[in-house]
Image 1 (cartoon, rainbow, N blue to C red):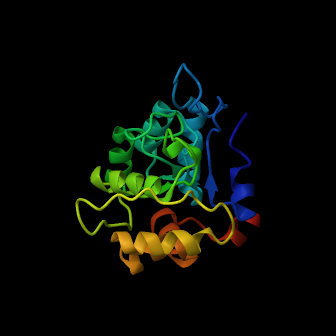
Image 2 (cartoon, rainbow, N blue to C red):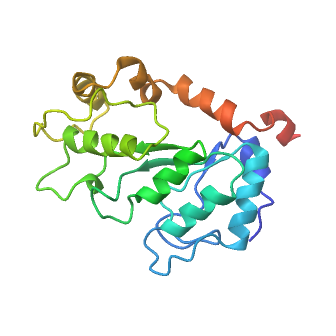
Length: 212
């Protein structure tokens, strides 16, 4: 019930921590908690300590108020590593425009996931569903390495996502054809880009100094 072990986890190599799952934790309310109570005092202390240690805060599963308060109180940009746009599909796991705008204003990054929560269907989600959420994220000024080539594109209901390790071979050519530049796609396909963002934005002491 305290944050004394955070340096241990950071010393072992942990660089991202989620304060909540979908349910309530000691740190705050998850996205499925109807009370939407936000960060607890312990959660606020955890965010501050994570900022000091160079551990990124990830509110992908957190409730609306927890997400908003984490963005507000964090001295460093936070992450929403896997979510969608609630304006396109009203699901608790997706983030509303207010959260996305606040995230962008503080230099944070959002990742659009390949989950059923991108669309009401019918049928499995498709690449078009993914592109719709990317477009919307850009439209509300998300700080994303994606940039659409134009304000509109021909919409074709493409086949469902291929949920295998080879899915990028199917998805990436379609995204490139839709107008996302190849170099910008490297942001999510190249681990060095993510590592650079962590070094530049989150920082923190070297691992050896934490383990003693």
